[in-house]
Length: 289
Ligand SMILES: Nc1nc2c(ncn2[C@@H]2O[C@H](COP(=O)(O)OP(=O)(O)O)[C@@H](O)[C@H]2O)c(=O)[nH]1
Ligand SMILES: [Mg+2]
Image 1 (cartoon, rainbow, N blue to C red):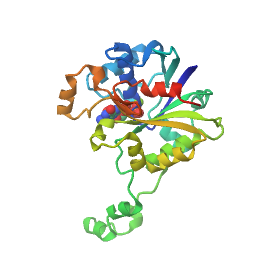
Image 2: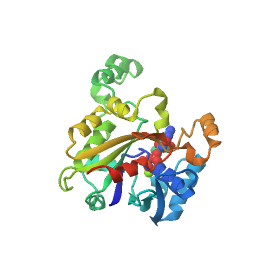
Image 3: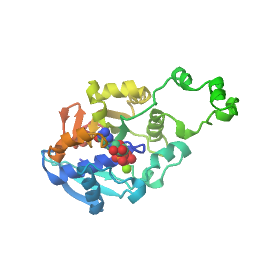
Image 4: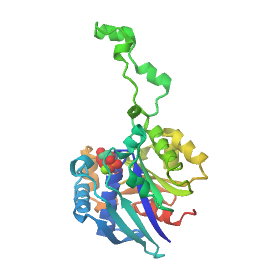
């Protein structure tokens, strides 16, 4: 069976960093991976540029600066010879945000969904203020008298309350919206394999929780959605640290800089822990439909 993989995820969910690390991993061949590079289509200089930035602990160039490029990495399972293509579309940074906020998606996104494509869905672990309850949220709002103290002209809550807009939705609500879009027309409703990649896993790994626990604790809506929609999704959850460290943490950068670049990568999943970013792709290729 040949497989294709579709990449999804809100802006800043770690997609380009994953692509940069994956390209380094399969091109440099420093450590063993279950999938090997067969071929690629697209702009090699773009792939080399983001991989170069990744190796040098520089932020991968932002989509808005150079534009992402359409690239497809063709991979082959070393043991079974099965082939798969990871297609990273030319995404403007806000593509998936716009889909949620404006309820419009790009035609090429719909057309790119072939029959049995597996999905790689990125969610950043670096979420802030996403899980506040209404009570917690309200307790942070300054009271009218506090506002009046700091600014005598402000006493009326109408003048200070920020009007709600769809872009203020919590990330987990946006994620559930994106997932529920693809099980409804005009998308063909069918059983799909999906990997949830919790990126920047280095930021949470010391807490000792598993990626499944992380999702249940931090994005219970997403976890419940996947559980409830077992007729549509066969899912698996991984924690992935494609970059290895926070780029502004100099001592952590110095520490991992001594390693062979491929060893900076960490991935935690059902098969255990390692640095083979192709594991989730292997799962997508082999999971039952
Ligand atoms: N700590 C840490 N940060 C990461 C990791 N991967 C990505 N990031 C950060 O997350 C942000 C968004 O990453 P990017 O790959 O540009 O996301 P994209 O918009 O989905 O392509 C950047 O600031 C990255 O430095 C990681 O493995 N660890
Ligand atoms: Mg990007």
